Length: 447
Figure (cartoon, rainbow, N blue to C red):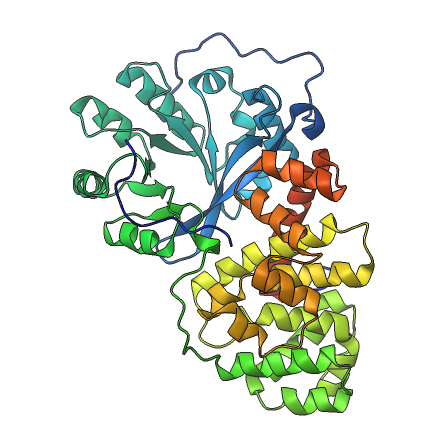
């Protein structure tokens, strides 16, 4: 059934490179092709796709991993997906975050999942695709738990025969687009009443209004495109003082102002001055003596690094929320992807692409129209053009990032070819950007 609602899903319109801010019944094993010891993105014509999982406190608590192909070749085999996860060192990622991994009964019986089993690995089975009686399927779920990982189920019902399945699960995944909203609300409330300790994750949440609706109905996690879509915009909204000071400093840096001018502005906001000193004294700067003056801190950081730090600080200054940190994670990955994708253009343009990635979420962060934000900032016409109209020479780069974030690999591959970028490099570029963003966040929090 399709969703019956008048609401339209929204569509998409760091720092320095150093780090900153019981056994189941067995089945015949799934054979692997000879020499299949490592995935080749070029050969598989697919790439790992990570979908953000946001909890009810608006924290980006993990990702669901899957394979996305361009549709030009046959769908990759499941063993390729698991090889890609191993190559990406998923167990290391799952030490800190939830990693949801779709898995088939055949892969479980063959033991392909065992190398990825960690306490934060959540293996997701689709009830509708698992051609097993409920008691046998429950056995597989219990086997996953016995391996030391979490379990999740899609397509569960409230029928009595599904009770053993839900009892063996840590989470149930529901798709918001599977039925009408009244039916969905009724099912969610019955599920919550019957299984109060069960985690409920809702897929296909494509706007902030839908996310708030699902939370009101009792869900624990939301997946979908909502995180990077515009929420309600207040045309009268004002930027708080900490962020205004950051913008003033950014403008001075863009106009090559003297260090003394930068120091005078930084002193206007004690919180920002503290952050500048903290950045300058971070281990990643390589400075071995304690820096106590703003002038020295600005010199040690350098204008380029300070500009990136200040842009990132916009996500953490003022009245910050967990959602702001989630947006920063998306923005860092997007910014780094743009920078790597532009490796064949001049360095100054690559720096601006990085900035485009960070600024592209400022309207969501601040709840203001993008035009109103940019009016307060001194930016090149190329940056303004891409952020306001998705045009100009940076427009294709931002569109490429957005297509890949939405899992539209086929369209992204076509655009990459038009841009002179080899499509078979997109997966590696996305992986590199994701890993860099994770490391940058880790270091920025620890420092």
